[in-house]
Figure (cartoon, rainbow, N blue to C red):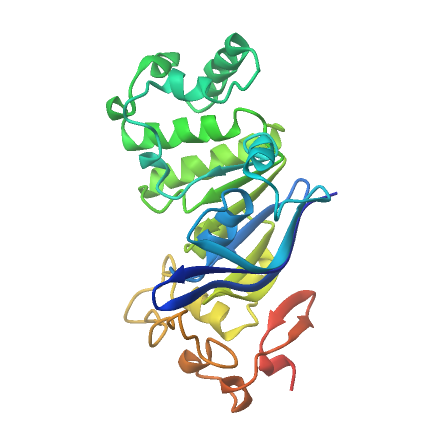
Length: 316
């Protein structure tokens, strides 16, 4: 069952210098029970994409495209109508989640803000149960965020974001500020929440493709606002097709491989300015395999081994 569909979405930021083309023609779907991972460097448009789905606000500007949730078009919905879908239909654990809790409210007060006609007693009882699932005491309900450690805040935000059992949970860079042990615990919590039916499907956003591989069924790779490759996780990581995907994976350290035997490969150059992105393939200025046409013509979508790939190497 298809829960979410994004069609040819273009989301720009209006600045004094012009439009920043943060998301520039992205199409994908999310089905029930699926974990879709979105990977790419900082500035690739990942966070803009997922935030616009449920939290569209200035200076974001939708130039083109449509978003559908269970067949209902979200683009153009009034703020009040979109608010009815938030948390119950689609919920988000925002980037910098540990800083998203109001410092002037106790955790219980923050949770009660979700009531919106629901039984306050039932909501708090449900919160107590969820806190136990993430190994937190119910005493946390009567604490201010400043009294919690970073890892505790992260788990509290996860409880709040999933308290209404959303169909789709968006996790935006939620492991980037955590140590390795806590990262693993967070990934396991999300997996457990999905397996127990607390959440139906997940969009997991990160620059860490190694972490993504542990949790995702499919992986979507973005570069400079564009989708460059999307397919099953094993295929994307084990046999990447797009030169950018390969470069991302080759930059990862590997256990048991010594520096003297094999050095890590960095990606030369820097991501382009999205105020004035390059013509053709946006990765072409940094790509060692670029053809002449890559610099002038945008690559079409090509199906390669069941994957969608946007690269002239496969569309000559």
